[in-house]
Image (tube, rainbow, N blue to C red; front, side, top):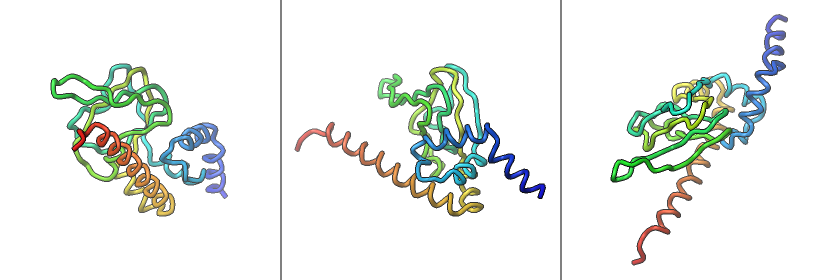
Amino acid sequence: MKWLKKVKSIFLDPDYSHHTKLLSTVPLFQDLKRRHLGVVYQYLYEHHYYRGEQLFVEGDVGRALFIVKSGTIELVKKDEHRSDQRLALLKESEFFGEMALLQEQPRSASAVAVEESDVYLLYKDKLDSLIHDHPEAGALLLKRLAEMIAARLRVTSEKLLRKAPAV
């Protein structure tokens, strides 16, 4: 009976409800049911960044996906003159660094907090544990991740085609 009280206390906790509600607005998690969001939340780390603080630097090995809980994060890439070029400005419910969940490769850009920001981090090893411990939630998450990466690749390819000189 104690375990039932514990489970009820987790699911009825207003803080838990707040987190799962926010996660439900993240496009990556749109196919997940509330119970799956609760499972995912258990595998996330929360971190606070101050204005101007770097989350990671271009070339760092990627080990986590970042989800903006609050604040604004800027993604920048150095151009051939070593000047920062803005790639994106990300706000609440947006995510980045998803390739790190598939491969631990060097980051292709840097990320910096434009203002005080809170983010959730999903590390690759935690995703692996989630998939092992909760295969249904893990499969839904991986399916959505693949769809989103494919969509982003399609957009990038179209941009490159528009910039390419006609033959």
